[in-house]
Amino acid sequence: MPARLILAACCSLLAGAVHPQHVTLAEAEWNPQSQSLEVALRITPAQLEEVVERHAGRSVDLDAEASDAAVAAWLRTAFVVTPPDPDPTDDEAPAPAPLKYVGKEVGISVGWVYFEVPLPGGWEGVTVSDRVRLNVEPAQHNTLVLSVTRPSPDGTSRKERASYTFDRRTPAHMLWAADLEPLKKSATDGAAPPASPR
Image 1 (tube, rainbow, N blue to C red):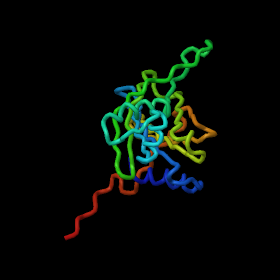
Image 2: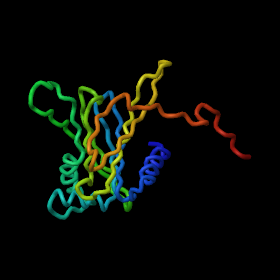
Image 3: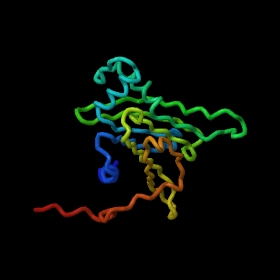
Image 4: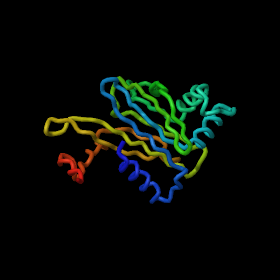
């Protein structure tokens, strides 16, 4: 993901007086071949450890491979994707889509949790509930940046993005194509690379 997009998302959140430790970022890309959302969730290691331990009810060493099961179990309750109701006439709520945990990377100051959500019916109209840390921190704000590659009017394909913010008042959003905006091309796109100095 371009650094500018991450910086813009963080700056907009900070401008709203949100403490940087009360923010997570989920980058989701639609993969049409596998019919799934591929998600990378950025969270600080301390916050990840806190929420996983709360969920597991025990101490968890994130550096150990054995922690993957605890991280996956927590994630399935904190980040839920629900397809549209196939039969809105019945009284049953639609079941959440299964979440496939892929793995994690935990550094000193940044952690990443990777997972996929199979959506055979497509991504549009699904409801995403991003409750990461919402039960822990009242000022928590989570951002989801959705990337989808779609045909453009000239017949080529272009990447489009939408951004959604989750907090205690709005812990869930429906994803719609109308929310997507084309990425703006930079002034250097298509231009010849600068000549190397001699």
